[in-house]
Amino acid sequence: MGQTSNTHAALCGVKAVDSSCSALENKNQKDDFCRKYSDWWNGVFVPQIKVPGVNMFDELEKEEICELFSFMPESILGSLEPSRAQKLMETFFQQLMPEIQQKNPKLFARIISIQKMCPEDVWKNRRNRL
Picture 1: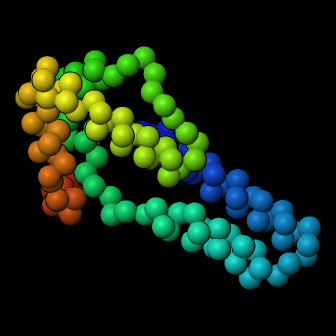
Picture 2 (picture 1 turned 180 degrees about the vertical axis):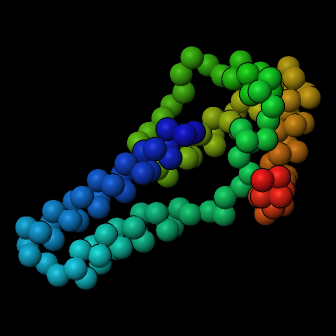
């Protein structure tokens, strides 16, 4: 999952460099550079943005994470394209859940309870602990 966010950051950086080089080569004004990057950002990322949920890996205990990963195969499908990578991860975990439910109902119940948590409450509690 973390690798997916690294890919998003790398793609944004590459696009920013591309926009900068294009502006320098064409002697564009600052607004032209910003517009090119902004148009790209609004077309590629804004439609994909969702209100973030609770990160289950922040909430699971170390032992629960180890148990979850024991269900995972050697490799899973991936993609460098951000929206496709997100869909692949969602599909993978959805397909994994019946096996977890059957073999470890306690872990399954814990994951479901995390999915039902309100992100604002989780962040509020985290801030209060600091």
